[in-house]
Length: 373
Image 1 (cartoon, helix red, strand yellow):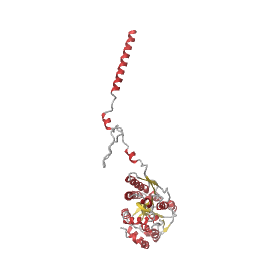
Image 2 (cartoon, helix red, strand yellow):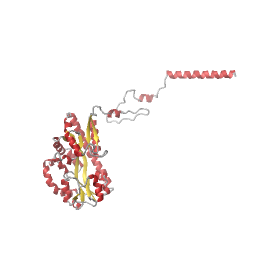
Image 3 (tube, helix red, strand yellow):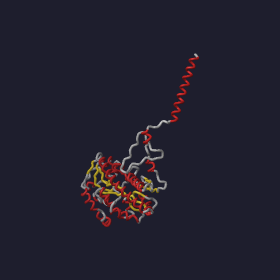
Image 4 (cartoon, helix red, strand yellow):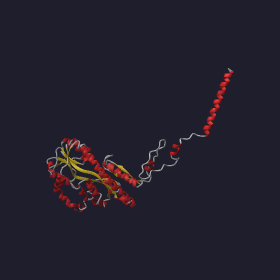
């Protein structure tokens, strides 16, 4: 029995010594990570190099921590100058997306010196109110409309004439050209100027029956913009003008308080007018410009370099807006073709008809009309 106990004690002592020897070896030589992982990971405190211009960043190797340079790049400058921008669209709507493109361009071009704070859905007031605020210098930026600006400078009423433009490219060429520059200059003495032209779209007629020529509107009660040259054109066609607010238009069409209306593709689709209207006549009879105005007080406080930066961002945002409008119109029309009967009338017939009532108004716009290409 004593021999067995002695043998067990000897085995335990040998095992203990082996364990101690193993620990001693590990302390002397710590286990290293595989060489491929150790050499690929950036050294402590060292940033991995950014890819060269035009080169795509490579995905991190397995086991390598992914960098987050975006946080550093998008971290707001504590000394950034914040500008307020008001527009009437809901978040995600056309003007909201156009405003966000302008915001991106300004913040990128100024390296974060300026930050655009966007207020959607008329959060700062109606379009009339925020336009007044820009003119007074109490608000930096606002998306307004040509009919509102006509109250400050009558030359802007020219843009409300029927059949003034042929398509979006025609609008872009003129409003981002001499015509738009002239109209913007008329606002400077009023405390603002146009930094970018956004796009609302062309207006088209919807009705409960087929409409090919103006005379097909005879007897129909139609809701039209509060634009007198436009109203005169429809009245001359024999239609009856129905004064209905846009917010109540769907119900008015559904209840028979008015028979027809006119709006851009986007509004027809968004407000589901196709549920209460069977025909869409693509007249493109009127175009509404949506200029974004900037306070002259703010603009004049800037360096020449920053002034040019804002103008450059505004032009690029406008070009983006017109392309966005073209893409959206194509997509919205394609959808409406599935839920309505879409008619493409002879626009020349409509244009000639509109001239009968437009001529007296055009006499007041001789100077500005000479700039139209």
